[in-house]
Image (tube, rainbow, N blue to C red; front, side, top):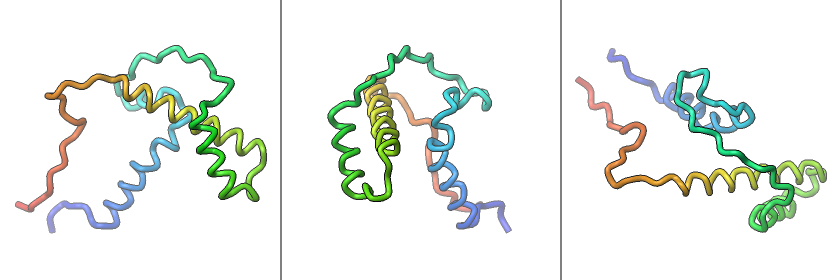
Length: 112
């Protein structure tokens, strides 16, 4: 039998990859232990007031799940949304050339 992934193993690995940002969110230097080159950290001033978009998204969460959330939960959720929006803005600032390739290229395993 060839050394290939079963559906279950593939699903487990996919779940691990999907969960990685949430697991490593508070670690800061997410790739340091893996020997990855880390981007230079940008100095970030703590933003005491979340943006209007972050507030609007958090309001949607409050309307849907407000009976299960405390004020501290909503504050944490709003700040988390704001942090992700700021990360998105930093991602948009990265310039890519037309010839830049992705980190990996998916190719289907067709057997031997």
